[in-house]
Image 1 (cartoon, rainbow, N blue to C red):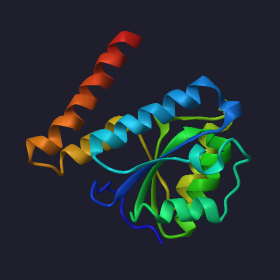
Image 2: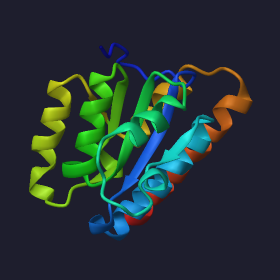
Image 3: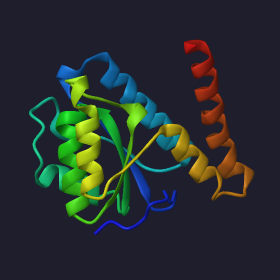
Image 4: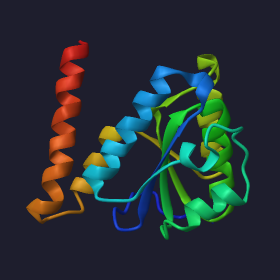
Length: 166
């Protein structure tokens, strides 16, 4: 069963899901997850590549794609929180992965369900966090500038984005 409450950049991969019904926000979230993976220097798996536009169903394709990453922890986001993300999180937790969900990089088809879904993921051992918190936790674990600089650059981008949105 899952055990790590802190993200270890050496054992994590990032997964992005963009269900077609979720629209532009889902695509933006998956892009942000890819940028996060690059900053962390970890593998990124766009789950759309597994399903190729077909229905999102948990099965051998998904399990095999995740297993191929050879990581024990997953950062999972995109859309739909109340669909594919929930399914993938629970299945991954049952398969023994540590699962981290950056709430700011998830969107629900029915926004009123977000808190219910986050509660459910927590109930089965998942960790709800934010992209900023992930970056800060990983920064605290690195000493080398080559490891820290991409994380700090992404953190700086988030600060600029926050300032623009205000």
